Image 1 (cartoon, rainbow, N blue to C red):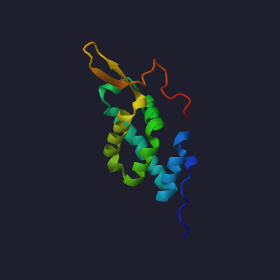
Image 2: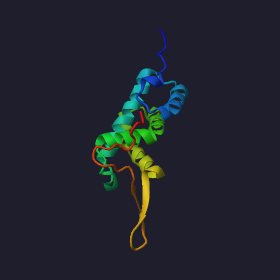
Image 3: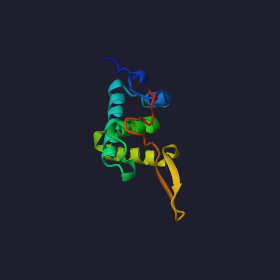
Image 4: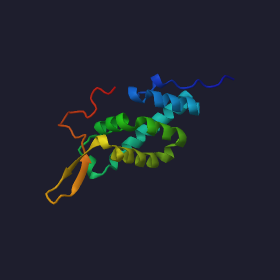
Length: 138
């Protein structure tokens, strides 16, 4: 019986800048196509769960925009985590990681100061209706 073929990063819908890290994860964990597809789907489901549970600061993003933002900024780390988890029962845990990754990314936030001098942070990925925060990423 032959061994399953290792997954190929080109077969996954991954932003170009994440391909090297995803390829390393595939090689290091020796993920076959089914395992890589499973990790990808776990990431996709976790992003959807994170969108459903997103805090008020992120409600301006629709599901597609939220997916695109999370994939663009955090996919490689989420894929690596999903390769370890390997089970849909961990989708809640990974969804929390999605939100943590987005909240911790300084590129997604801008600071403003209110009249009392208090600093506030909110997602800067807001775009006018129909806009895309990561246009041209793929």
